[in-house]
Length: 91
Image (cartoon, rainbow, N blue to C red; front, side, top):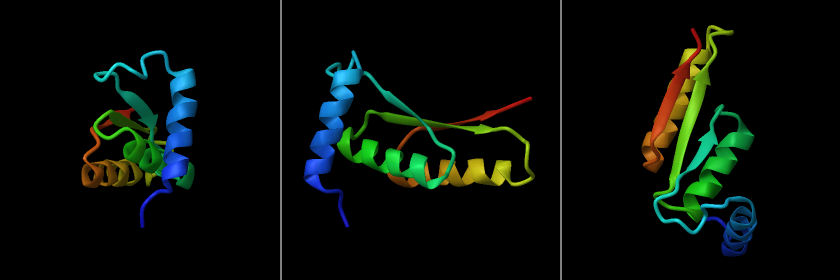
């Protein structure tokens, strides 16, 4: 199941209006990835709209015992999508 081409074009148009470096081929879009449905949907949409230009980061805040596993899950999803990912631990 793919993403609707009209949705991709709308996303690209909206993003180009907000992102000054949109037309620079080397510019990357950073996604803050929590692993929740909103950030995952954004990651999937951005990856489809801007192949090779998306990077993601997850904050492992350590506030819950599950936070490290959630960050690892985010890293796994990014690996499957070919998106560079960084986990940022809070000390």
